[in-house]
Length: 155
Image 1 (cartoon, rainbow, N blue to C red):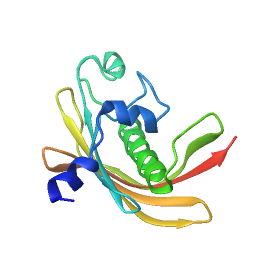
Image 2: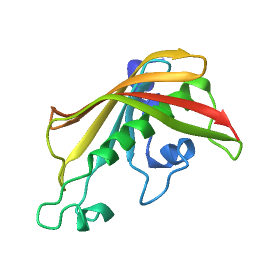
Image 3: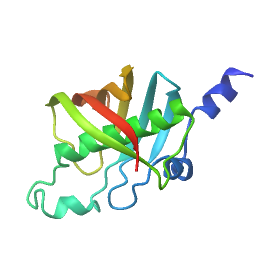
Image 4: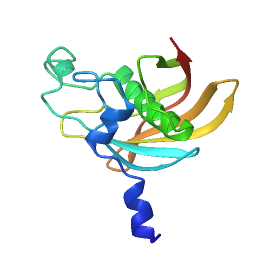
């Protein structure tokens, strides 16, 4: 397999993203996966547009993407990495929970027209708890960092 084939096989368009996330508009915050390495890391993309439903109220005079939604975008990227790593997909019997966040830092506001590049690295898995380190950049500048704890549970 060539390097180009490997790269092509580690990207996901919106149709495949929808297979790995139960979220839908307006809560789907991943537009594309640029790359992933099963069991290691994922890099995903979120295009931020002025049409986002939160901009009308946050804030009308200076629209800024809420930090909690940037963290949610990181959590959605972790879900995709987790499902890819365990070779499963969400279904009516499995749910992915975002259970904790440590060290969240918001370094720069995100506004309409920005493109979030979300990188999440797997740190460890212990007893079904996944610990990951996430960094979100816009134009190469870090806007958000955090460590996330997540788990998959049967309903």
